[in-house]
Length: 491
Image 1 (cartoon, rainbow, N blue to C red):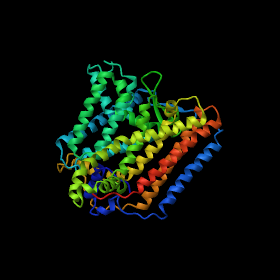
Image 2: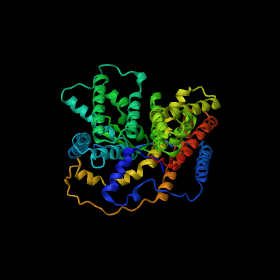
Image 3: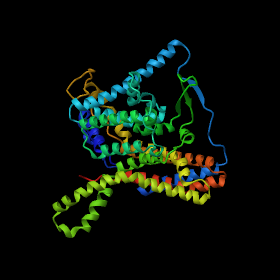
Image 4: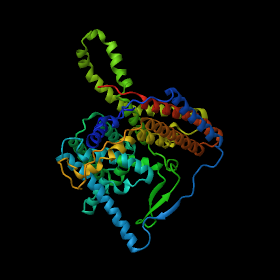
């Protein structure tokens, strides 16, 4: 199975430690023998993607699904309803700020054990995983309850002007700040020791940068383009069947119901940096699954050990000492370079589509048009890597909530449950992951083709343009399944 980061594996170990004496039942490295050869999975999934492409192109002449959306007011008429909606939103905002404060406080004064301190689970599991999947279902609720935006609003109410920009946000900067923050986040997840104090200091530093950015460039510009989680959840929300929009009076909010994934057709990135951001959503998860496998680790050690063998002969300790620094560089360089590798392949496929269709649209314009069709793949990759962890860790959340700082409290009066959790069905997990990856790629093909019908003037051009995209999708499918099947290297 694929590699989880040290942080997430330690959190899983916490659930094993707290709830069961049978650690083997919870480990994701339980061997599983596939019922058919692995190459059959690859061929079968690739063939399914190709057949889907054929079916989509066959019906390409049909109208695309751009249905009329039904709208309802969140703030319905009536004083009681208005008060309920207003105070309900205030409670959610206060809860978001409270969770951020608890996460920081628990890391600063709580136990140093990442297994017993709630801040690790609250941030990495509940927020970064759980809220991502929730956003794909219910839309961009984060835009309403963003704790950093809420605190900024409170500061404004207190007389501090953060709406007026001291400097104009540069157009060329685009979403690059959010992209760099994203790389830093995954770097911390993969390469820093999971310490509650470290997480708290990182969140405090990020908060300072966020408030400084809002003060310099105005809160609207900063939260719209530079704040990592606003951009991340905004991108994920394009897949949701719900979208929130302000009412005509500027005070009420409306809910728009739409077909799932329709937002990826309605919206498109206006800056190439957002394309890079979307591709890093995909490449970072793939790299997380790859970077500690036998293949990736062996790619470095086996090749260099053989190449530089004359330098140390049979002294393996000397070899390891000499190469360890370069191995750390190799691991980190893989993460940083991964989005640029994916971006290069993506641009090559877009350029091929432009050449084959002879369209006058630029490669940049086509890259922007088709970028959001990749979001379903990025989401299902994330789900396949982490959904079992979310389920397992959710079981111990009540026990962390009753003792959030790890001081031995029992604030909620919860009786510990030491019954053995049922073992994971590795066959079900594997086939669920295969199905999710396949579903994500099929959805992406449909979105890409619907986009092509909108971008190109003829049916022939739209079909031809999708041949390179089909190759890209099949490649993503096979890479995703291959990474999931790789065994972990032993450290």
